[in-house]
Length: 204
Ligand SMILES: Nc1ncnc2c1ncn2[C@@H]1O[C@H](COP(=O)(O)OP(=O)(O)OP(=O)(O)O)[C@@H](O)[C@H]1O
Image (cartoon, rainbow, N blue to C red; front, side, top):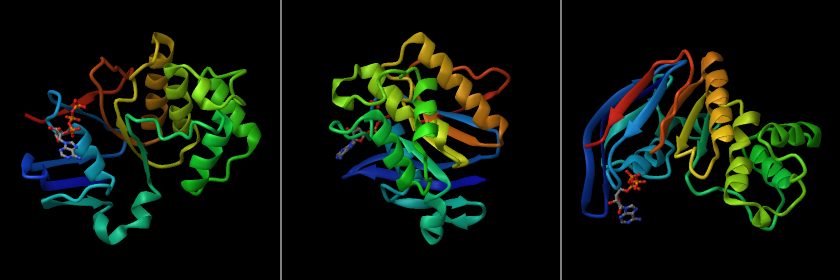
């Protein structure tokens, strides 16, 4: 379980939020909401240890994440709104490398199957720089199919996706939550996971 207590974050001298507390349990889907610039991305990045909070504490399975360090990162899948993919490499190489960095040895057959489920059949061996925006996004989101991390932190996962891909992402979220996974995410588009209650955290 993720427990956030009295968290405060700033960017430079600019305070974003203070006294933010919430929990996230197995099977829960939490949307961070707020107008542009309210600190949604900053909150997600702070939860993943990329930014230091000004105050407060983040606990994972009862322990402060600063003390857990690598053990916490191994249980975390972060997909930022910038695709963390290398332009010169193809979708297959990108997926295998990112899985490897997360400690997962991903065979070519499995990686190809994941990319095909993401609608990239026939595009697996092209450098991602020639893919469309939506296809690049699909290539980045394929990590959801090969991750065994229980905590997913997703920053605007639906950006650039067509209706079919949005449906697929909603399906993948449903599968993850049904396995007792947890998801915290932002989106400016509607996102519905069938049979799952959407919790909301509003930054104001
Ligand atoms: N590196 C930085 N240096 C200074 N200020 C920054 C930096 N990164 C972000 N900010 C500021 O911090 C604030 C929060 O940014 P953040 O990206 O967390 O907002 P957001 O709620 O995710 O916005 P959006 O809905 O537009 O994606 C914004 O005012 C932004 O300009």
